[in-house]
Image 1 (cartoon, rainbow, N blue to C red):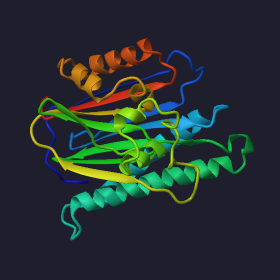
Image 2: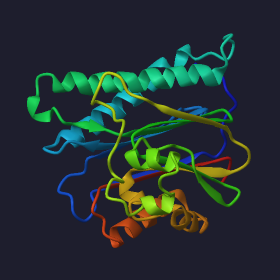
Image 3: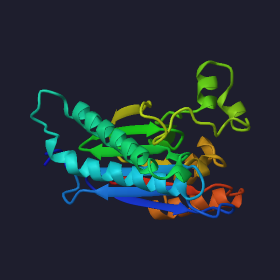
Length: 262
């Protein structure tokens, strides 16, 4: 098993809500915390495809990532010549690509589900390290020092327009292309994964969510809610309630991990 500095006072909470319009919840959430509290991860998947396809894709992908992360952990060694963060990144990439294969394989004999796929955002905390990966537009945010920052990067047409300077983030909020993805899990054999890594210092929290939340709440609105300092479970519920109050046209999933005695 990985021998890493123990994380003290880690608290996780997460909820997934069907919203006000959808007849099915196509989001899926998985969280894990090791018995000795040195390895914590959260996975949020937002399925697409309709006819139960989205719900199936998100469930398969999230569960596969969770299973592969836990099963492969003993091979991650602090004594290796390769740094532990790089090992964990390779381990996470393998888990994500396995999840893609599992979704692709599931569709082979089910032509009615040919259009299904899912986003993924995963955050792993091990020792004092944070590793984040995403495919699609489900997001991860880090809240520390009373400031909230997005630490994932959307795979979307809108993000490409922002990166090229054609559009600002504010303009993007109301653009008709804002939900059009450029990458997803379970759609093609080859796809891109965004990674980000951080060294955690002092108390803070991590928030993962599907776009059912960010469709309605911008960075400043989420930051204002987290600044209340409420318990993680209460903050999750309040954020979901706010998105539902503003329309709730999509499923809404919110997960919060408090670390360092936040």
